[in-house]
Every structure is written in structure tokens, then in C-alpha cells.
Image (cartoon, rainbow, N blue to C red; front, side, top):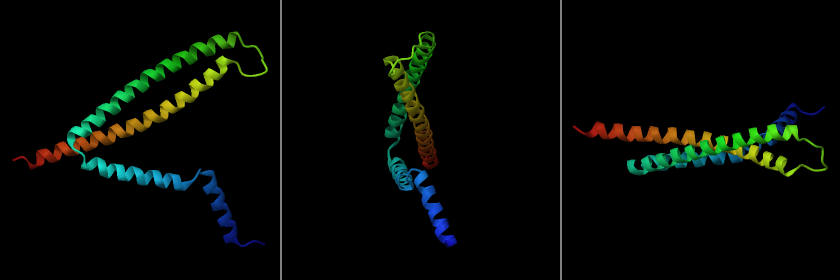
Length: 136
């Protein structure tokens, strides 16, 4: 019979493989921590500029998401009526899969931008509060 520690080590190795690499997650967290320290040292004007850029990108992503979802709704309703079994996927089906992939990317990017804007807004509030604190 195998040792319990061998069994547990094997299970731990399997779970690490399923997570998709913990090293990448650790590296990402370290990079985010370094970026947070750098952001704290930036001036108020540069933080405002970054915040504005993030908000503009969010607006662009929102409009692109609305366009893609509208196009997907139109193509899905028209394709269901004209569905014919062919050897390979049609051009419309390929475009639809590309659009759904892009929608997933947009959702991930918009969530990351929301986090970034919250972080920048918090840093700006801290800068403003500190500025008020030292004025007598």
C-alpha cells in the first residue's frame, strides 16, 4: 500500500495542474503590487489623466459590446431560418464565433478597467485628502 503522503502529494500536484499554473497568478499579483506602489508616487494630474483614459476606453468597450450583441442577435435570428447542414461551418458561423469570443474579451477587459478606475479614484481621493490635511 502506498504511503498517505505520496497520495496527498499526487493529489496536490494534480490540483496544481488543473489551476493552470499558480506561478503565473503569483507573478501577476506581484506585478499588480508593484504597479500600485508606482501609482501612489504619481502626481495628481497624471492620475486624473489615467482615470480619464480608462473611462474613455470603458465607453468604447460599451459601444463595441452593444454593436456586437446587436449583430449577434440579427445573425442568430436570420441564421436559424436559413440553417442548412453543410460539410464545414459557414462564413456566418465563423463570424459569429469570432464575435462571441470578442464579447468574452470585452467583458474581461471591462471588468479589469472597472477595477482600475476604482483604484485610480481611490488614489485621487487620498491625494486630495492629504492636500487638504496640510493646508491650515
